[in-house]
Amino acid sequence: MSADAPAGGAARRSLPAAGFADIDWARPWFAQHEARGRRWQQAALAGYDRYLDALNADARACAQSTGRGQPLAFIVQDDLPEGSAYEAHIAATGCVPTRHNLHDFFNALAWFAFPRIKATLNARQSAAIDVLGVGPTRGGVRDALTLFDENAVLFVCADEPMAAALRGFDWRTLFVANRARWGTHCEVRVFGHALLDKLIAPYAACTAHAWVVEAPPEYFGWAREARDAWLDEAVSATLAAAANLTSRSFSPLPVLGIPDWWPQNEDAAFYDDTSVFRPGRRGG
Image (tube, rainbow, N blue to C red):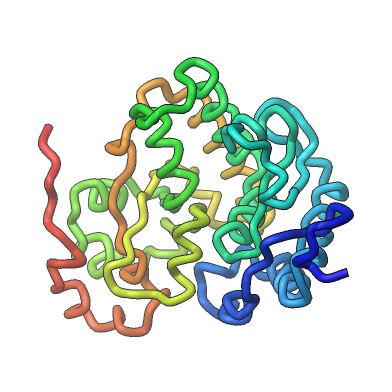
């Protein structure tokens, strides 16, 4: 049966698969997703049904849950009941409405890379919907949770001066003076699925919302799997406890400024572009 056929529960509203073929797994921002992502990419290129089958097979194998403890699953976008809030539906049923596109592809990958963080975001979003309902405005906390989900990077750092440079828009200190400390005292993980979607075709002004994570110095000697697990637990706990989340809980970070992420930034003059590397705007 065609992936576009409406009968028998088959996937509907399949989109052209060309976008999936455009993923360049050599890009550093995709590295954390490569192993699973390559498998899903091939399934997505084969069609919407094959794609959802691959996501759900992994969800069953990993036995993950959403914000209210429901088993994680992925469903056709059209199966979201009319009038239902997306986050509330996920929390209540465990089912993530998923389109056949890159945006939702990267969203699904985030559920496997950082399952506790995703579940915490879902729990807080659905709790806010319970209180406030779904209206024309979401409120500051829901806006901040959405920014995290869509556009955050985790700025993991064991060097307070580097974290201070990020918060203070001191790009020269962060990227030039401390360049040799990247990878041993600081790293960035892309979390936001909309940001990954944008980075299919990277551009200089692509800017993330950086969530600063203070890590112990030994973090940078751990294997990737141990760092992933520590980040997932530490960040989800912080998010769950953060009462006053706002957009100012993040720091802007131009992604292509990260050392070794873009060849042009090997020249220090790359950071002279103040339309991208803007001066500070925060008061006390």
